[in-house]
Length: 178
Ligand SMILES: CC(C)(COP(=O)(O)OP(=O)(O)OC[C@H]1O[C@@H](n2cnc3c(N)ncnc32)[C@H](O)[C@@H]1OP(=O)(O)O)[C@@H](O)C(=O)NCCC(=O)NCCS
Image (tube, rainbow, N blue to C red; front, top):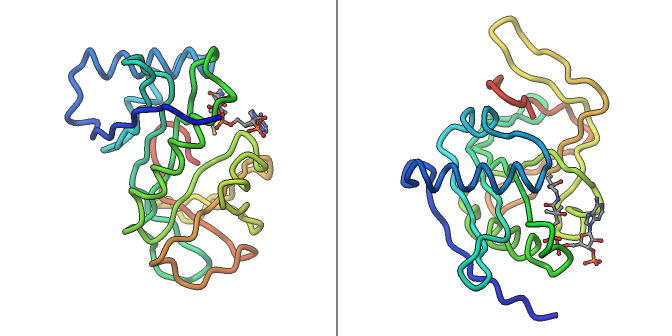
């Protein structure tokens, strides 16, 4: 089916508080949980908004994080969050279109990252499941992430050679660690 989605990009800092609240409500509805505090923890998000006939129907955002594979360099990573489509508009390719746009927009980063709800969903879009152990970098050192957490990466033009069996770490942050 042809996707008729109008996609707009906006930085979180340029949203009015009403617009920000509308996005949080939209995502909370899609995830069926209150996301207010999670959203407030995102640092400098860029939102990708999909409109159908003027109504917000699909969304994703990315924040910038520093991921590190093994003992490699810190990688400036576009970390994707809050991928959501309004229930009545699911299965129409909208989130796929939003993710394609995210991919276009983050080409200048060293890497893409996200924590998937479904590995298969993002594999279709070219993302790869990280197979090695996950850690969070803290002042006290590396804190291992429980095994049930999954992270996927998207290789971009600037991504160095990465071995997905290596360890992967991210800086500590408030809200969800991955
Ligand atoms: C996941 C979500 C964003 C997909 O949005 P969407 O606009 O319907 O996605 P698309 O139309 O681009 O893709 C639909 C495809 O995803 C597949 N899909 C949907 N949910 C899936 C799941 N849990 N596991 C695997 N595949 C899934 C559908 O089967 C469909 O496949 P098809 O194209 O072969 O028929 C939407 O279901 C949603 O908002 N879910 C609640 C929030 C959430 O979990 N977000 C993900 C955070 S990582």
